Image (cartoon, rainbow, N blue to C red; front, side, top):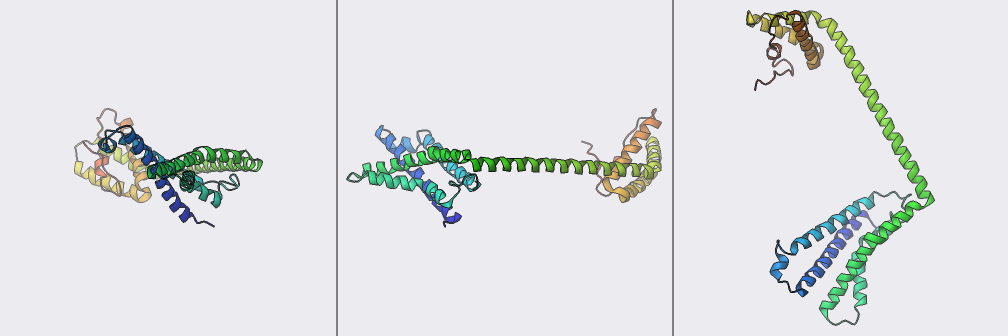
Length: 270
């Protein structure tokens, strides 16, 4: 049995061989058209097309290799076997061998190289672009493959639906727990919220004493429920202050008084 590591090595080598063959034919065609070597290797000349072609073919080969390793054997009984994969990845070499056999008797080295390169090019194109997709499609049309595919997709849909239900359940549970905590905090911190609202309404008068008292209230809120509890108390205090002291311009000093308590940070003044 051929190992996957060997298949990867053969795939890389055959892809490199295919790129070299394509590059050789392209350079030969440009030379026959009378183009100088400077134009061929220049980034502003035909070499741009050559680079694009080689990169595209390399990425295609890598993509096909990754996709092939993810095939399901039941749905692809032929193309998922190691023997077929060995044939697939070695196609450029087999094409080159066929081109060599087709040029038996040719004494000109240039023509022999052209035959080898053309064999690799055409064999790779036919197998990778035409034959392999066609065989894969025929596999999917087989009754066993279709049945397994339908069952697999149904299981995947059921699994996604179950995950969605579990996600909604967890969100609902978290929301319920948060509301429960908020009700508890409202009972425990009602007096603190009223005191904070009163401190905010004092303005600049006794600012230092108000800050010290507000810090003590913030520390207590942090000990009860952390940052979320502090946010809830802050909201309660601001709402009370706005509703009870409508004649005053309310400045949110609480956010600055609490700076550094637990993970509470005052908002940026910029």
